[in-house]
Image (cartoon, rainbow, N blue to C red; front, side, top):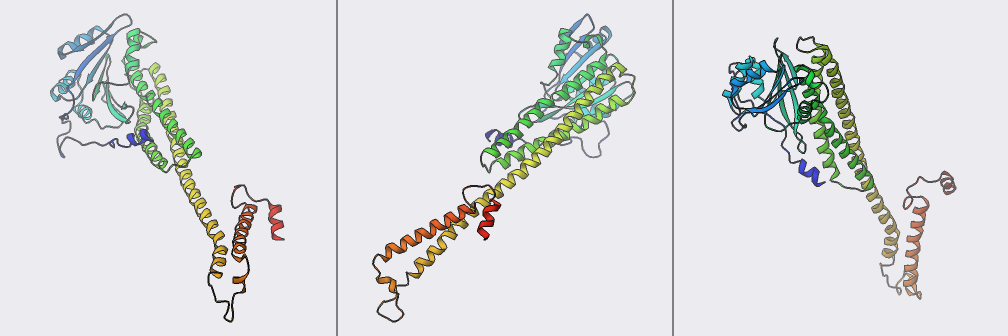
Length: 379
């Protein structure tokens, strides 16, 4: 439970909009603590490949003219001037550029005629389930991406480009956009498996021993499921829009692959729903275990009280100590070995009650009583 306690300290996802209420649409205000942009370019064709960091924005058009596909990745949103310069260079709409720096957007697809603006949310930190916005601008010969910070789940895509594996080097920029969205969606599968393992562990611990702290573990997993479901649902709508809507930037060949990506999204959402139902069942099971444990405790206390009731009566009766010389005396007070006899009587009563409880199967065996034995007892 230490890992669950550590994960419970994570901050809940929230956002604060930095533009003032009533500000002009398209106002770009960078977060003061955001890292400065680092621009990296991966440009390729079927036979050529270039990857390098770029400090001078004026060199970007050269890659666009030379290569059929150019991927410009910007890590960090801490410089408003640089972001606006990139926006002017690629003709990005002011509203889309505002959504880039306000990195609390849900997954979506916006059509700007000569560009497609795609927003996806990828997991940045596996342990804390922290999400990060990935902004993608799809053009005819380029793909422009903005990330909040360095580090992402797109390294498999980069390796495919470097090694020219598959068909990515022979396809256009729309296929690269699909590859990125598919990598983001597939990165949720390990998280889903992680949640499933936690549920299996909680179920095993519940059936093996009683632990009141398991309720807290169920609560943590439930919060993670809510976060994953809230993050994945908009992805289904966004990918479905890419599949459904006809756009000149998305070819029919790429749309086939996007349908597979849509299937992965639906599969993840169904998995989250199934885990959510399992989480509810585990919570109900834990409550029933707590109630059963309380009933067992009350049963033991009731049996103890029942056994001591006749013993208390006997000791109370012979504890009155009336004088045997007066009328209405207690003749048993002068019987030899009366004290030992009373102790034997009390022990016999206690053993008789225990045997009766055992025969009724109120103690010991938890199996239901035999109806034949019950009939004999009734007779």
